[in-house]
Image (cartoon, rainbow, N blue to C red):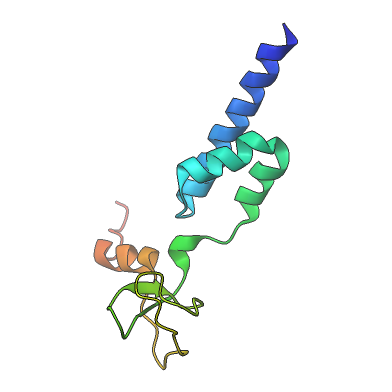
Length: 106
């Protein structure tokens, strides 16, 4: 009887971890697995993890792929990246800017 209850709890923690990770711009499946395999620690890690969709980006001079500002190598072509003079807005900032200013409440 206790086995299915434990499975239910760790599955629920996995779903919570996956949801938190997805909201921060990560992979639901990856955060689900982490939170499912290491139940409480995985969920806490998902909560305190840095949001990926808020990271500044830059463009690879070799292939043009947008990569995170802190990446030293392009994951597509392997070009070694120097720190740029200008950064590109994060995915979240681009979405917020495209949405425009919020309408005033009436």
